[in-house]
Image 1 (cartoon, helix red, strand yellow):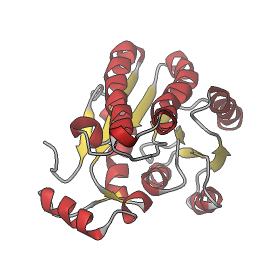
Image 2 (cartoon, one colour):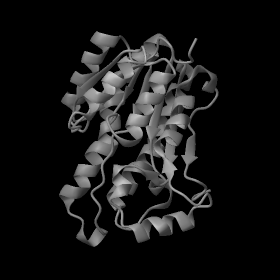
Image 3 (cartoon, one colour):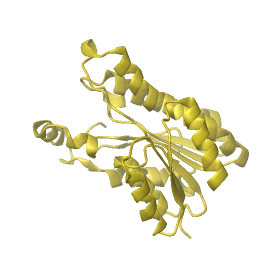
Length: 248
């Protein structure tokens, strides 16, 4: 029996990058997967087809998680079609980089809306079902930037640092209810986001990383999938760094 067989998972921002790798890892572990996306250009549907060939169920749900009504409607549809969500991966995130002096309130609010309000909106709707069943796994995708800060990313760093604090607080609140809450903080990972970074910057990042390379989305997904499994039941309120040693 696979470790997540019979479980239902929801991965926000699950069509691309780290989210896509998490979706595939969850399916390989036997979980049925609800894939949230906002703009995927068909990537979500292609991913569903790939997962169907693996023998588990998958369905894509379009929703802007920064909008409370969108998030709640999405969860209601998932529960109606899959049953209660036992594993939630809050992965959806965006960047709108500017130095703070050049940052507008719109750029600030846009990033906070998706990266911080999104996890609130989705978790708030799913958590009661986990409490009722007495079992659940919540994994929040933070970032090394939430631990160290980064030039031009005040908005992004605030959301990821906030997500870490949210993780620890929620873990304390629901630990006695059979629910664990953890965060994974990736370093610099090979995704669509980092492909747009100039090569000299990437080389600098590699030089600053003890392992001397960027991470892979599958390496982040492996940590997340481990935290979702029953055998991780004594791990809660933790931030698991997947950063090649860049921040210790």
